[in-house]
Length: 193
Image 1: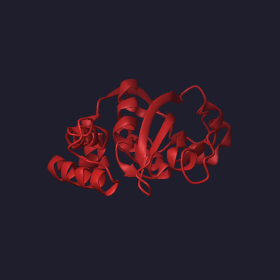
Image 2: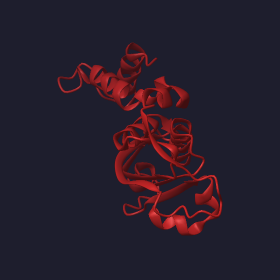
Image 3: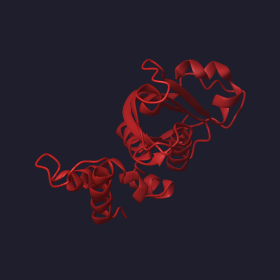
């Protein structure tokens, strides 16, 4: 669990290390505010991928399972695009922002509610991590919930460790793909994401 008291103490120390007075009017409650914010934005750190899958394990029978490789997967792909999300880079604790996720899967007997896909993305992003791992986590969770081995996750984001510090390339975006099953072998399916 997230230790809000420890966060408050460390933020207070950080303010001092930056050369400011933590008792100054504008900073007096900053450690508490930051601790509350961290509790919210890092909520996913309290849960394993399996626990997140259990949280959002609401599926419905769809009556379709394409085990036959000769059958056409087109027309049975479920895609949710442009899911707004954010995360924090584990290297600099810097915000990954303007993040959009596109998630696709081919149902195999069960479908998941669309809002659950967005909730999975949101919870997977609320951790200190790499963008590549977010895509893998989302795919792992979706596979566990739906039973489908055919999953694709595309993430596109700006990283403040690139846009506002260091090289300062304000228009740079990072795109990652996590491809499983037929999305990995049938490149035509990538047109969906």
